[in-house]
Image 1 (cartoon, rainbow over the protein chains, first blue to last red):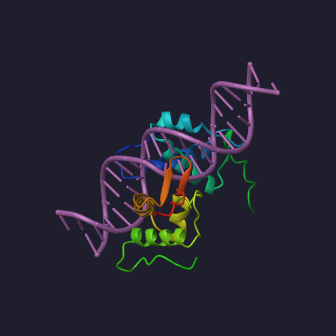
Image 2 (cartoon, rainbow over the protein chains, first blue to last red):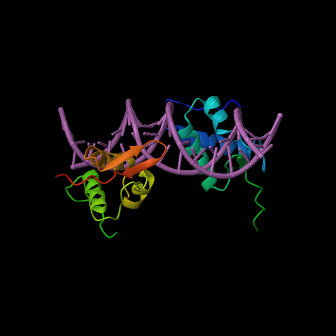
Image 3 (cartoon, helix red, strand yellow):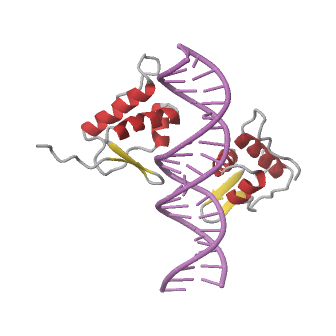
Length: 84
Length: 84
DNA sequence: TGGGATTTGTTCGTATGTATC
DNA sequence: TGATACATACGAACAAATCCC
């Protein structure tokens, strides 16, 4: 993963991180029913605070892309059946 | 609770909110040793920012009406014994 | 059975930047 | 200039659920 967070740009960090994770779900780097990195890992990998990580994940949760379970982790949502 | 915050009037929002909460303590809507609504709840209920909520609560803290505890909440101060 | 580690959830504390009036 | 107000960002403490030995 070469995509990084721009700590200086105008785009909020939490939105950049949400975009990054969303892209990883879209391209298969993160797969359905499997956990995404923990908040701690995301904090350290991207050098952001927990607040930023949680805001990013909150966006993905609202979008239905991930499901967070206390004590277990946050998982990529099951694949949505193709709508017709 | 019908009292609302006037977002357009001349009175600062944080002072309106402080007045509102103080009134709720006075009339028993908020009771001693019990938590007042969280910052998040106050933000959403009154449609103001966190900054405004915290400024309002800061006033009540200075007045000794509430006590804030990190990780727990903000509580109406114990009843003051009648002074004689 | 128990206890510690992990992980997400909640809440207040603090600082900075921007915009508006 | 200063006060008001919101958004962003990091921290700290506590709570609850889960996992593992």
